[in-house]
Length: 389
Image (cartoon, rainbow, N blue to C red; front, side):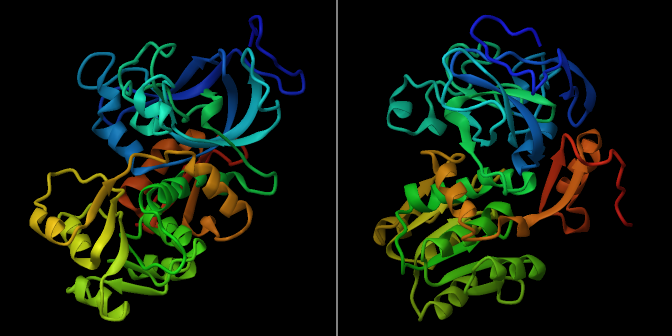
């Protein structure tokens, strides 16, 4: 890479001019091609991507949009690279950057707010008023890697320094990709929930965010932590991450009564809703005590009928979160650095970057009960692993 004035590189970390990158064509059609290696601007660094975790929103983007709908004509943005839960190594510094060093390992947040709107000035950069207004013009407005700009299913990417989270050398690449997932759970529980030690929490849905929601809640001192779901093997992982009680809602269909039984006959203080089930919002509302709080962390595809009268009568707070705002990833990384919980319990499969289509199929179809699938840009043989039929 030819470094322009002000960009710092290091001969010990050589940077090519072009890189391998997956790009989106029609819905679900990804092609491995080459792109120029991007050049960092002011307040940006170039990250050599080492590993990327696959998130459910990646699947939505690839197969349905909406971020990919903006450029290239309908229905999808041609030549766009998805992927947002990545980690890597800083290999070049944009002008004025001295907060990070070349060779430093980092994980990344997705959202870099515009820094100018009301929400960004409040620290709510995941609610930036300029989100989605800067497609194709990253010098103005909000930037969200893997959403409004190219993401991490490639070999190099640029990130604003506001999105970087330093990680220790002893943390594996795979674990580092999970900092964002843990950060989303942390955001819901600390910034919106106000959780303090000794309060009771229900987490609904043992997906990646739900399972790490259990881990974060327990690390913060919640008591009891109750996890609900439909898959016994995932509920077992929830127990390993700190759940005091687990409830399989197929075996105990009155989940509200089951929760109250396990909490001394009364509702809980908080519910972190991660299932996106059609009846999940109302069940969460009925699980909490009067004055309790429900945090919605999932993305249902259809509108839900909500018992508003119950909310009003019982002074319940219903909150929504987007991403991992207010630097929650930094707090999550601190818990992981201190070994307060083992996030790697949700990592089930690893594939090489060249095998991304197979990795996406494992994540989408839950092949071999995949939970968190990680794609590595280096260090994994490029061998297609087929599902065991």
